[in-house]
Image 1 (cartoon, rainbow, N blue to C red):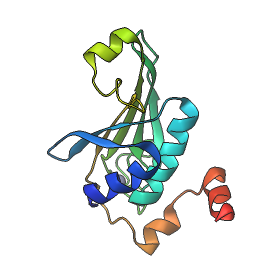
Image 2: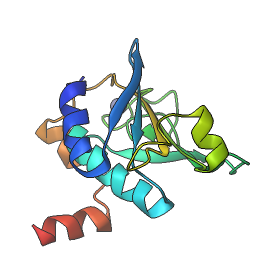
Image 3: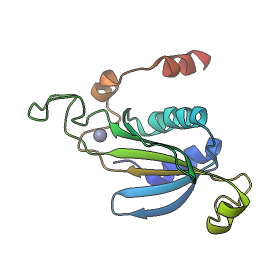
Image 4: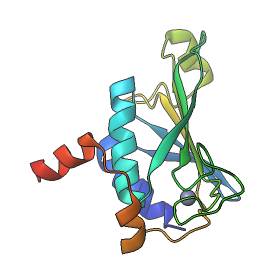
Length: 157
Ligand SMILES: [Zn+2]
């Protein structure tokens, strides 16, 4: 469990994030994320701040008003692993992340005030806050699958 206010404050530095709503263990944010590349950047920053790691669950085909939509699961989820075999990595965690980019036109701005902002907050980011395992501990960090992008970010620092 992490501090949602702190997560939003840190994300806000790069992506102009605002909290649209939070109910039970789920939060919905709006963010200035406008392309697939920016979604990848958001995911890296989000993973870094929350000390979590995500695997792609599914791609949703784009529609008339949604230009991009993808969903992820915590890497401690059961995906790609035997559900019956709980291991250190597979805790059966159900934390999930979902990012959508809305089409920004004169028409869509009328029905969504976040699109009319400057800069526009085209992305709708929904995630489940609770994990069923410790986060931000050395054993978890050891299990994180480090991506090439993450390595290059650390090398830049
Ligand atoms: Zn988890």
